[in-house]
Image (cartoon, rainbow, N blue to C red; front, side, top):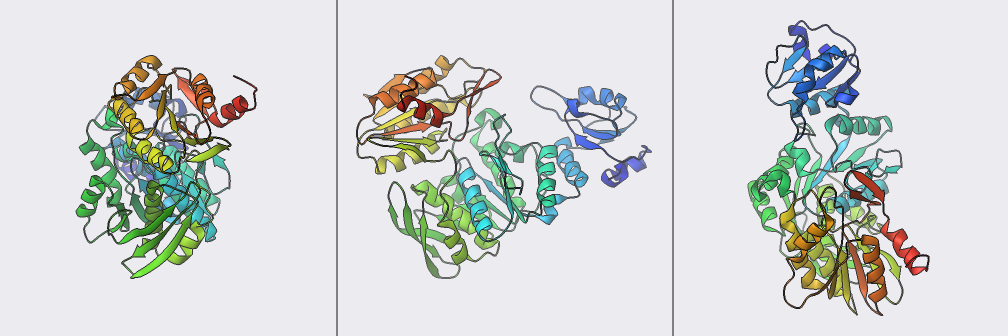
Length: 481
């Protein structure tokens, strides 16, 4: 791919043509004949390095204002330019894939994995990009343990799409984060289908307000003709109203285009009748996933495949063999008491997970949780209130404290407890887990919330190995106290 192919303006500017080696916004990756796109970030403005990048041999630099440089291309939005240029550099790989996008505060990962499972069962080679790991249609899931965001930066994202195409992929399902949408990490794509799960308070440290957060999420639905929207919260209702007559609605607790009736749940299985008003048909659905919020995820997943033209009966049959997603309601010990791991790290997610567990807990529900550092601090007391609603005992500990003092985070969380709620503050998460196991009795359930699939803790800038399942097994086997 030449410079003139990717940036026709370069020819008009008299910039010398060449074979492009790379498109990047990372100064560390700058090399001869690359295109460097200047991005203004929270801590660094790429424009300050533009001249240096030209001196290093960059074929062109893309800027948002005239800097008087010899090989500059000016655009109004360098973030969008980065996505478009990344796509062009890899020959527009998404044109060769069915692209499914899922957005929402909670449920993205489970919904995305349900879609991948169903498509794989239907003999489609399907990749996935998201929080719990990435599969580039090669059968290997690479974890995001080093802090890769839910939706990676454009140069990485489009290189992954390109790899999927080279691996003969048919489809890609991806979690699309609000930050990615706000920052145009994915260009003006056309998604085969897009789904909305819910919207609750999170990421306000970045967006500033729920309105901005909502509008960022809503941007995904301009990139598709097949919109599937859960109307089980106020923002879903609002989004469905914005696309009235141009979306498919789903619901667990109210009538919609697709909705659930006659729900039966145990700790290990869920059954319900799916009512599809579009074809006036009822279907029996059986799943290993439990909890009303997982029924919502199932409905969004099935709705997205239905609008994309897949047979609903075949999709429901394929769904039945899905065992779930790593780090989402995983039972890691089941003896006199039960230990469950879940990624729940917002007040809404905690409410849904603990509500589901509480319904099938014969004894006490013990919830161990914490709040991440360097993130929206306003949700911390809300998390405590959610835990108090369902748990008998709360153990507040560290999550990923990052650059904050973990004791300060814990104290902020505990301001949300009221009345006679029994809670303990144990900063060291390993010791907190040990304490939970020590106090658990017959019929009790311990919910370890916040880490889920993560196998590390972020302390300052370090990713310290921390696998909760291994820790629980080690303690229970007597290898550690």
